[in-house]
Amino acid sequence: MGGDRRLPGDGVNVAVIGTGRVGLVTGACLASLGHTVACMDADETRVAMLREGRAPFYEPGLDDLVGDGLASATLRFVDTVAEAVQGAEVAFICVGRPPVGRDDRSLSAVEDAARAVAKSAPQGLVVVVKSTVPPGTNRRVAQVVATERADLEFDVASNPEFLREGRAVEDTLRPDRLVVGASGERTLDALRRLYEPILDAGCRLIETDPATAELAKLSSNAFLALKISYANGLARLAERTGADVADVVDILGSDPRIGREFLGAGLGYGGYCLPKDVAMLEKTASRAGYDFGLLREVARINDEAVEAVVRTVEEAVWNLEGKRVTLLGAAFKPGTDDVRAAPSLTLARRLLDAGAEVVVWDPKAAKHAAEELPALGISEDPYEAAVGASCAVVCTDWPELRELDLGHLGGGMAERVIVDARNALDEEEARAAGFRYVPIGRAAD
Ligand code: UDX
Image (cartoon, rainbow, N blue to C red; front, top):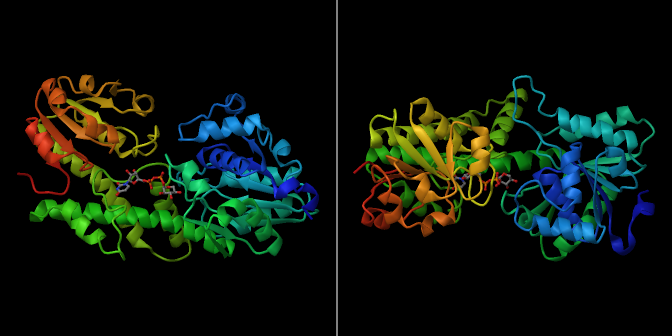
């Protein structure tokens, strides 16, 4: 079974359903490992763009992989599931999973993809769910496929991704661990062959059951969010008690059992994954009859982080009405042009509602920010963005910020005030440039 679809040199014939950040990166990376990959997307414009070698979003190294894959014909783009799965040994479901909504249709894209794959699946296909999903989804996918095609021999497995935006190619090709949740040896064998070069390089493969793999993925992201909210909770406490949160988390994080990463207090976490995954894990728990209230607190503290910055800006400029505020950074984190669930935009909305004029500078995401929030002013130049502003707020910890000439920045401002909502700048330098410098997580001077 599946043997007739093996490629020379152990390459695997792969279908990828969905060319979002996960699907496209997965497809392009698998092609670079020597497999033959067909990536499918229902959006014809996107497929046309990809056929020309252009990725629809920014991700370091991705354009090159797509170009190489097209040139060597190991990677192709199609607009029907039938074409993608034809002759495939493994089909990855990488469709988007919108935020948990009231109507609870957030997994319908996964169900639709499973049904479409089943319709045209060759015998022996291994259907792998890569989208982040609650435990139990693999079982549902297997039911959908079996209902659609009673004649089909197939397997379903979970193979969650742990890729970060801005490092997605690197994280895919050199992951910390590979997780496969599968029940059959044949499926495990197919996935081991797929990832052979990565495993040969020493990456640990954790083989488990599908529900465990699904829960492990969701809980990894929720734990990262928990660490950030813990730091933000400490920031609120530090502001009230005269402590300095930056030092507190340094001391905390130097204990290897805790670790320094993801203890950065500031504007809170955003992006396509963390907020959604916290909500999905909480909902999964509540449906299963467990009240995981800790996760609601994680989300609440994250919302509060933005509110704390709104109050700090208000405190700094007094009346917001008619004042200009410059946001330094819009992307939900550095290294990406993504503004989905970006806390900077929540802050911008709150400032606009209070009557301020808001101008944003971001090296990559300014255009997307303005599309999301047309009332925003944008500028490609940080110095121009700051002209006439009563306050500049650091929203994203871009390395470019540390290259800024703060004297020049302050020269054009109505008042030299910086609220450093990522604790990213050098305080001495800001003060030397004549700024009133307001960090996060420290009592006001
Ligand atoms: C995340 C996970 O890290 C990744 O493993 C998963 O597969 C997808 O989701 P990503 O969404 O790219 O990746 O963002 P991440 O790098 O985790 O950052 C998430 C948010 O946390 C950003 O808004 C970032 O600014 C914020 N953050 C991070 C903090 O506020 N403080 C920190 O100390 C670290």
